[in-house]
Amino acid sequence: MLSRRSLVLALACGGNLVGHACAPVPQIEGCCLRAGEAADLDLQTIDLIPRSGDGKTDHWLGRALLRLAKTFDVNPGCGFYDDGTGGAHPGENAFASREQKVAGTEGTVLFGQELFRHTMRRNEDGIAVLAIFAHEFGHIAQFRSGVDRSLHAGQSTVKLVELHADFLAGFYLARRKAEIPDLRLWSAGDVIHGFGDNNFTGPIHHGTPEERIRAMEEGYTFGGGAAPSFATAMNVGESFVRRFS
Picture 1 (cartoon, rainbow, N blue to C red):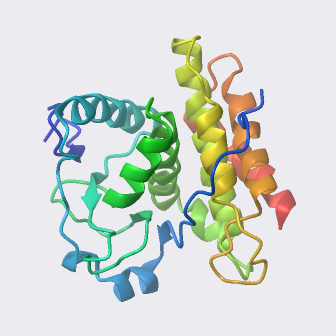
Picture 2: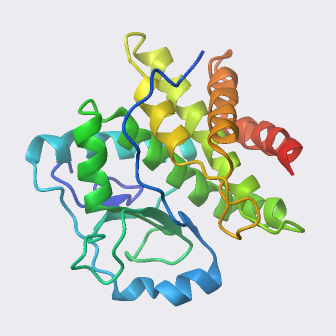
């Protein structure tokens, strides 16, 4: 455990967000697992891998996730899993689940090793990885509050739930920018934009690239205000994304 809040990532550490066009990024299939999806995936069969393999990366990432947990007021178990061709569930991905993978925690966030390596190769400063983790922590906060069920009610896709998590990721990045004014955030917007899709009727449709970056930028704008609370961001984000239904 890394803190008395028992966040577990057993790593070594006990305006416009789109900058320019880049190479295609992998499509995340389903980063918010509901009860049936989690059962299909069988989270308990997935090994949680506690370290990235690089001590310096583990150190900064562990610190970053503790900050995320404090801001979002959640306590998930976190780690990596094998999303490569040799893994039980291949395909670059990251996801959040209500299921408890680590005792004493609240839900689980798992980040695929291949997705992590791919994203870090493209964005060595780690901001894009941080944006993905913030999106997943947003899902954990949704599970706690029940807003995921509210946003999904009557909808044929998970789009509103996903856009709300994008809003929360933007909010978090704005708070980090306020602390570190020189922080460059274009890679975060670029990766979220790239994860959009046009499968409008598919149940795992996350929103178009334009919708996803708009939600993130709206959260960023809101987070840049006079120290708004995360609870307020949850409510404002919910109201905002409903216009996309």
